[in-house]
Image (cartoon, rainbow, N blue to C red; front, side):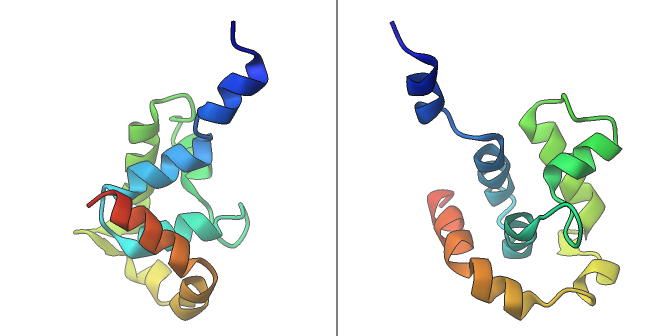
Amino acid sequence: MYSVNALSATMPSTEQMYLRELAKYDNRKLLLWQLAADGRGFVGVGVAAQEHGKGDAPISEQVEVFVDDLTVDGEIRSRYDKGTDWEALEEAHGKRATELLRKEE
């Protein structure tokens, strides 16, 4: 019989599932944004999904809502792109983004 702690140690967190699903879009900026999500300056998948009434939807649907909010034709919407310090995000989260993208190859 498994203990709750043993099961939770083997199951990915919601955040990990968001990141894995986002990596499928092969868009580094989406990953950087989610890695920086703090609920204030950067709103992540969970908040976007809640705002659209999809908080209880499967992870893939929650991520789709987030991607639709942030992108147009696969690129970050200009209103978000221009106001974001991508260099700072890259410095803070670039290594993890690279790891996630490599896992999806």
